Length: 313
Image 1 (tube, rainbow, N blue to C red):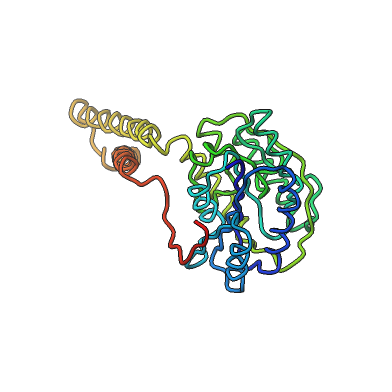
Image 2: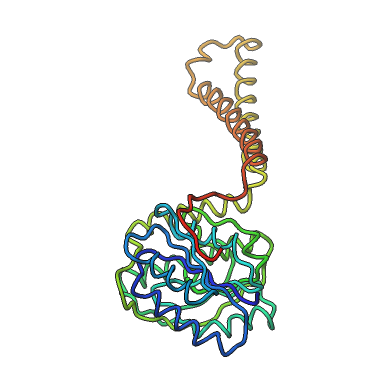
């Protein structure tokens, strides 16, 4: 299989047939073998019936239907585990991602040997105040914290080598940070391509104001997990030892004052309680790191989601 397309969707019955036809017009002349995997993330409209009909008409179409809405990250994570193409494309089903960009992105993976190519919607057609300005600030923050020089981390249109998607786990709202996850998995050749942003033709956006709250929290999570997910003791251990030593030294000094200098009123000093607190916090941090190490050694690498139905796979 030359190419796999992973397309998560939620209530997009009007756009799915147009997207399928558009992809066909772009890819059929290339002579590539390809598959289209639609992930129905708990749609309440007729999206699944449309996918079933397309699968009957075109055997390159496959579909997974979740029991309920798990989110875009869950859909991508499930799709990444199932696809087989040498190059994997992700895109949204709302017709805002342009399939005409796919051949050039595939060539960047094959000929320029990129691990990942991310789309950049340089000219966005979204409202400036509610989407464009927050998006610019978000992308600037992620660039600063991750060191990856991308302008648009959250663009749904991306191309990957197959081994890249096999090496990362996407959950929560981590789909925004796939380039960061790929970098921390050891894939450093990450490119960018300016892509055309299409206006939404059907329906409404599925992402609300809560993304501004979840985004920064997920960024902190992905940085922590990327650096310390497999070795949490490297974070909690030194902090625990530091606090424990501070608390021990304070209490040792106070004990010297009490037993040798015979100074009274030691328990009335604020530093006495600070020493006890530091000793307790140090012990708790060290035990947290120890327990986290045990959990990280036994935890499964991929989340499992309840699949209600599937076609073609």
